[in-house]
Length: 459
Ligand SMILES: *Cc1c(COP(=O)(O)O)cnc(C)c1O
Image (cartoon, rainbow, N blue to C red; front, top):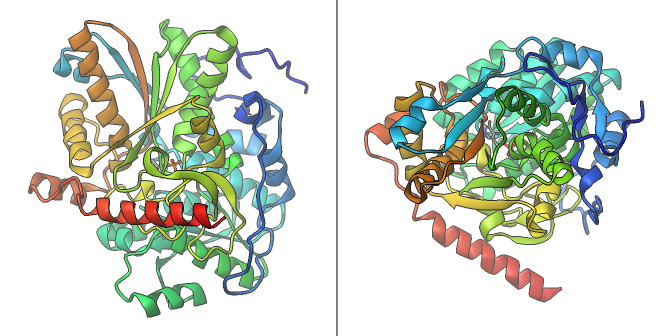
């Protein structure tokens, strides 16, 4: 099917109860963007990495078509819980006495409890088609590991997840959730791989990071014949798969007769933000209706707001190819904040490029202020957000208060990317007054910035 480039949406008549027939590929609308990767300058350790993507996914990741058809098998799985609800946060509006209309797309309603299942199902489907038997991955807070374990079970694949150790220790129940769904969890850094063992030798108390866990997962996948590494965020195809969120939101808002002045999402590597924001990017571009796209990140891992735009690896050892992105450096180990899903050193190449071109904006918040916002949200809406999602809520509350002060009504849409029912121990710490804005992270970030600018000078 050839879709005319001028349609604002794949399904302009999508009804609020329906699941989109296509994913939206923002690359089609980015004039001047060149997707490319550079091979690693040198192999730091371990055997040469095999290409991990099946051709079907690789084609998606380099496609320039605006709309990519969703396979019927994937759509059938989506229909088990999609479309997710679009909810007007009236309780929050009243509590803030704001003239702003606040809506959230509730991805916490997915079977896995977060948006990550949208891409997990698509990836498991394509890998299965390609004859792969096991998927190996790195997971931070465990949301991705949970989603992938579920998707692997649906399509008859094995699943192994290297889980960042500090998150593993903060949320032991996550491990149980992955295992109940047929997956296997290895806390990272581990001695199961040479990469993990090397890091532990240098720093036995290392809390782990997503880039270390992905070094381990890559090594493990390379050494087993029928296993492949797959990523939960950052890559073009992952951003693509998440766009069901924004497309549904467009249709749901159309039904209500509203349109957002701002679309907001927390940013880990960027798929959650891109998932809700990109369909609005196209719609705004083609209709001329302005909407602000805002990514929200933690102050302890501020790649967009304080990183630099350069070539960098995705894993800690520097074995993966380099992408051009906003990064704090692939060796950066962020503080052990509770929003484990936002502890990734870089932002997706597409999101980074858009930020560089000022097509999107970004803000960062400290951990305590994020939990303050989450608690206010719970009392207003009776929905417990994941700490990651609460970053978006912090921004939305601040913006809605400004709207009150300025007396300007506006419409704000945000992605409530996951529920926080597995994060109650983090809330317990907030209640006990034990959370601060992590001032200690400041020194780490300054060190990372100094290291990056020294590297830039070397070139
Ligand atoms: C992983 C995660 C995020 C961050 O997602 P990215 O797609 O990497 O930006 C946000 N919210 C929740 C609940 C998550 O699990």
